[in-house]
Amino acid sequence: MKNINICIFCKRTADTREHIPAKQFFKGVSDKNLITVPSCDSCNKGFQKDEDFFRQFWVSMLMDRSKVAKQLMDGEITRSIKRTPALGYQMFSQMQLIDAYTKSGIYVGKKTMYCISDIDKKRISSVVTKIIKGLFFNEFKQILQEDWEIKIIWITPQTEKNLKLVELAKTLKWKVIKEDTFAYGVNYVPNTFQSIWIIDFFRTPLFYILALEKQETKEIKKSYFK
Ligand SMILES: [Zn+2]
Image (cartoon, rainbow, N blue to C red):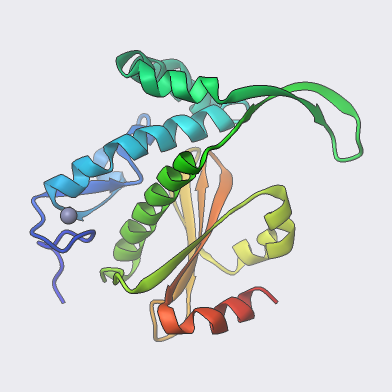
């Protein structure tokens, strides 16, 4: 099947290409090294607001541990907040200082926490869904069908333990798009495109994702979540 002229998100005619993930994440990398997929103009524009939020959110979450995230924060993001102050204001008004402790209970000072709203969660899920559709196409040269389920699991210290993330990550085939910025791992059930994914931004695994044919969801979940 030739999908090259079909938008992988809505299946209308593709007149442009969409970066997976958004180009604005990357600094100092040539366009030909980034992943792009066929997209129509309206899908391409439709993602923009959510993607701006997604990027600002993760950059501000991870800038303490990533030089690249810090640079993005200091540069373009500050500029884009100036351009659309409402978004910046909304993000910072949801930040709170909380007391932070180590695992053994030693107080280590204040830490910025972001109180995430349901709308934010939706925005983030919609961007992760978009990224997975793009990576799916990039891997399998197939459009992820609408009746498939995309199950997104946020990776927190708790899920990390439950999922045995380190072991899981070793079973995936990894592709590094830019070492300090974005990488993904994938594995799939033989003879199908049913797949598991981990996506890393700024060397931090953020999401674990299952892309499954609907009727198979239960079986597969069982086998992965033993
Ligand atoms: Zn489209």
